[in-house]
Length: 406
Image 1 (tube, helix red, strand yellow):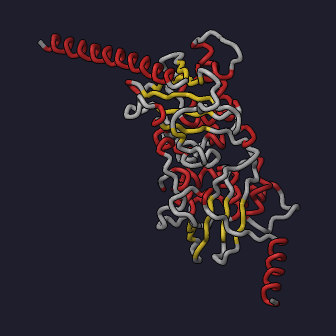
Image 2: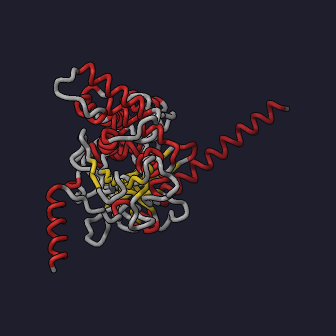
Image 3: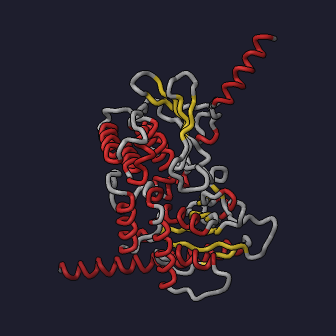
């Protein structure tokens, strides 16, 4: 009796799965028809987790080519190798296959996550699409298939994955449809215009980050649902006053990754190639005559104190933060509107994100408060404070003198 029941249950599961696949096939054909009626062509090259790499192959090819699994796997290898050339940056994206607190070296962490994805034949994460845009130097617009708005493509949501090179933003984007399938499989299809119509957009639907393509947003969370929601508001939660918790909130939408950010920053400072650069921020008594061994010891002692929160973050940590996250950090360290900008000193890209981190230090305990002029908006919309350098101070003094004499 039990065996008969088990066979019946297994048969029912197979029948349900078969019915589901048939329904999905009908939905796919219906979806292609809807796009065709709106002047677009939807090509789905495969219905597996390599479909994104098929789309990349066909998008960059000048001529028709055979669609094979081997070519898709090669494109995946090329992309993973590209990510491994800049592990510090791509390591910032939260790994999907395990938890990482930042203590593991960036290269090792990224390599393990990519190998797990490849071995498990898992679909690409947002990190891979950002990397693909960087590798191809083209924007990639991903449109999510929404079952609520599935037959009205104007209501579909999209996200623009842009390379950091702002000079290529005006080029025609690669437009891709993303459909979540049964069992966690994600199918990607390429969207093209049937005719080169002037009144037809390159990518249908509403692009969530259309005006924020060069902002960091919440990209490092590495989840599609977060990107398509695109609720980014700088400086929320005024009760978060610790620097690393504040940074975690801005980059990941939660405080819980504060230790990860601290460890990543400290790891960058301790890299052998960066010794001469960061040791001078650890101790201002270091001179050209100081031996390499002493410099290394001083920097290591400084980092240990910073990690244990026995020492507040200094200029070295602020410069390291800017370098790692590719972001301008604007800080008033005195609370008296004496603003300073910390920019990347270990450059990976030609330009940083449009969205800076603007903070004001209050009190002796080093409380970091966000500087917000436009609540509920991205940091790129905040009015940047006036930063006076030597020339700026001279101009300010002249302006003050003129006002007093008038």
